[in-house]
Amino acid sequence: MLACRMQHTGSLKIARPTRRQAIVGALSACAAPGAPARSDGQFDTVLRAADALDQLRAIVIAGPDGILAERAVRGPGLDRPANVKSVSKTIVALLTGIVIARGALPGVGATLGEVAPSLIPPNADPRVAEIRLADLLTMQARLERTSGANYGGWIASPDWVADALSRPMVAEPGARFLYSTGSFHVLGAVLAEATGQTLLALARDWLGDPVGIEIPAWTRDPQGRFLGGNNMALTPRALARIGQCVLAGGRWQGRAVIPGAWLARSWQARTRSPWSGHAYGYGWFLAELGGEPVRYARGYGGQMLYVLPDRGLTVAITSDTAGPERGILLGAQPAPDRGDPAGARLSRRGMSQLRVARRIEPTGHGRLRLSTHETNLAAVRALAPIRGGAPPESDPPAAPPSSARPGPLRIWGKPESHCCATRTC
Image (cartoon, rainbow, N blue to C red; front, side, top):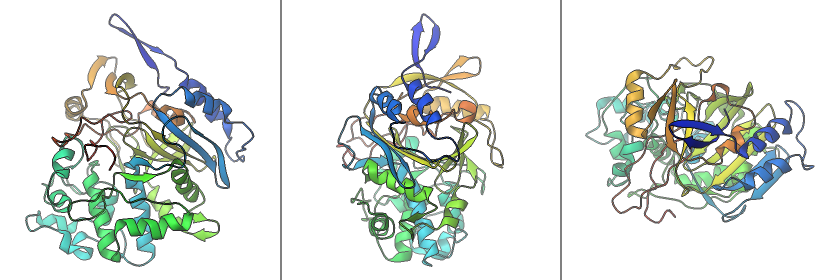
């Protein structure tokens, strides 16, 4: 479904097409499946349309052999780091595969009690020791979420790992996708424990350096652990470089960086988002664009990394997270996902919870009005309509720390608040 601006005439809401549709048409035609993408101006229409998206900062479109088109529409530019927010979760998932392949962890079936017992606080539910790495990777750890309305309290706690692991169990094993940055922060702490290196050192030595990108230091918790799952900073070109490596099966310039078998496992549907209806693997959302597979990472405010394997394309987008809130009319039901055993329509109770958490108001005829950003994700959704018209992952609003300014909203919904008052960490 195309994102449209909403023109209000009395009580009637009319979807008015925007210039995003130029991006939709251009990208959907730019590279036919199986045909090599070219850099001979075929993306000019896309870049012109990107200029009209007031929150888009930079877009980079690349194939396995190089950048096909790029533009810094506004903001710091293509070679200045941008906070990629929850795209960090996908990067931590990639690092997990690398750590396992190098033998520092036995596999995703390993439990916290087996590989990182020192991280488990004394007051934790005894079942916390049974949480597997796979549960953290798929955000099915069963623990109460640290995201959404719980995020501000979590980052105000004196120990983020202990706080995440001492929360109550709220689901049965494998029953629910619980979007939680705490799960990935615990996972990052496990990687550091297993390797004896910081998460920053791992990211630089085992991912950044091999593909030739710089990874600056980012937010740390009170114990000095780098935050797993949020606030990493990458330039738009660096983000696209990671997408190129993934597109090439984990290889860069002939060197194996990310195990190809890990990517294949990461792209298997293991649970499903109750907000978007999209499947989720190991750190990647899984959807379809015009009947073709697309794997994507997404972060607060419209930080996006798309990989379209059948088209040989990867698209990186960075955005301004401080734009105005706008209303968008979207379908209420999540998209079905073939082969996803966890898929289900939102329950009446779930819809009620979403209305409270995200200020969703019923508008009749099976549709909802979301208070949300109308930002640049529409540019890349346009590669073809995502099957079912479901919006990408949304996270309910966070309660920011009292010292923080009210955080902006991210694309299609309200995500975690920023962790600091200056929005620079």
